[in-house]
Image (tube, rainbow, N blue to C red; front, side, top):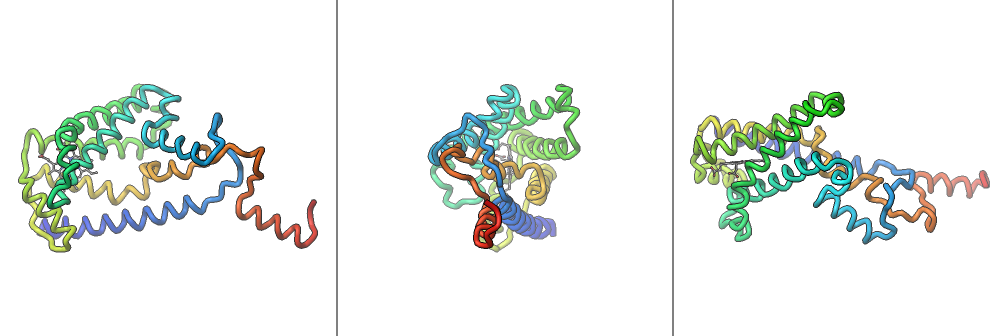
Length: 249
Ligand code: HEM
């Protein structure tokens, strides 16, 4: 019964995540950027923009320039989470891909780094007055959710072990549309329950900054306003209409 509920919820959550993300990304892609507003100094070529975007996504460059502590905690948290998630691929692949095996030892310690980064980011929302003032409930709730996922994962790893062979059978069963039983260990159920909440809320939350960064005009525009006239598509249409009706100069 429990296994069926979790299986159904995982399918539902994946559907909500996929549809929600496609919807939001289409919305971002269609939002007009009528002005040339790259944050300067900005690249003057397309490959330059590509390199800038890469530095932003891989190293959080603009955050590094603005606040070293937030950068340190944020970067450590994100890289550690990436390692943890890659390590989890062993539950979803059979045979396990060779490079997922390589990640295992790092991923194990990354769990602690992820939790430490999250706690530091959360602490900052209480300790730094300016940040406390602008922190809303969703800022705290997202951090609590991620802390809960990391803490319950570490609990399973080091304190209250679960049957990871059975967990893998459950995960593969979901992928193969052949649901398998899930161990009824409380910490595992908390871990997976919180992951489900994360999947459900992701498309409606501030966590959308992950796909959103690619659509930020201040980062993705080429600084060529003097060489090339910038026209948003709707403005170009207006331009054409005015020219054909002889209005305007
Ligand atoms: C956003 C997604 C997830 C995050 C951030 C996350 C995080 C973590 C962390 C930090 C740990 C402790 C360190 C480690 O063993 O790697 C862990 C362990 C664990 N997680 Fe997750 N997890 C996620 C999704 C899942 C899912 C979908 C499953 C089920 C297939 C799962 C099952 C487990 C298990 C069984 C352990 C214990 C590993 C062991 O005892 O060796 N996690 N998780």
